[in-house]
View 1 (spheres, rainbow, N blue to C red):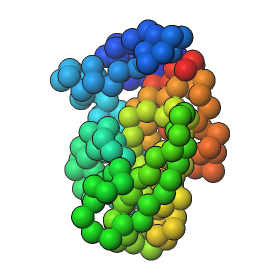
View 2 (cartoon, rainbow, N blue to C red; view 1 turned 180 degrees about the horizontal axis):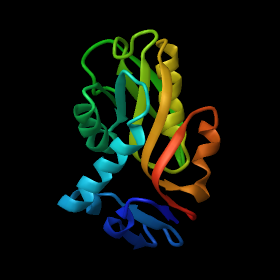
View 3 (cartoon, rainbow, N blue to C red; view 1 turned 90 degrees about the horizontal axis):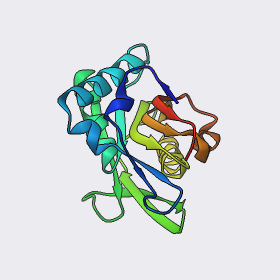
View 4 (cartoon, one colour; view 1 turned 90 degrees about the vertical axis):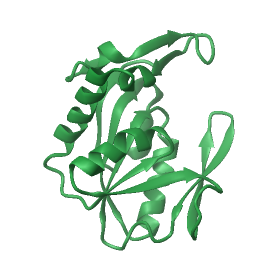
Length: 177
């Protein structure tokens, strides 16, 4: 496990959830602690301090939790990516694979302008399917993904492989699943 910020002591690990053999890494225990939340947001800001970008994008719902304070602190706008049917204006959508089936995510068609540099912030990378779908949507609107930033990574699920063409960074990396 790699952790340069001390975030690991705030992560609650729940064995055998949602199924036997899986260790669920609970992000809510980070945000319930004032110290855990502060060091996590500070770590994200530190990792992004030298990145040239225009907007932060975060997927529902934990990408909102971590992406919004990053956008605010860095003086950038925030773009939400939501589950299908939750956004009120014209959207683009992308279907992606889940462990057992598929899902669809959407973003407003005018959320990313051609040439904008985008940082994607999310809580966790597992298989990488959600973020891979988001990168395709950003690029279809003419945006450029310049960094994908996670709080935690489950390296054993090999999500980075789907994102190998991008600059991917995680504050905390667990070797397993």
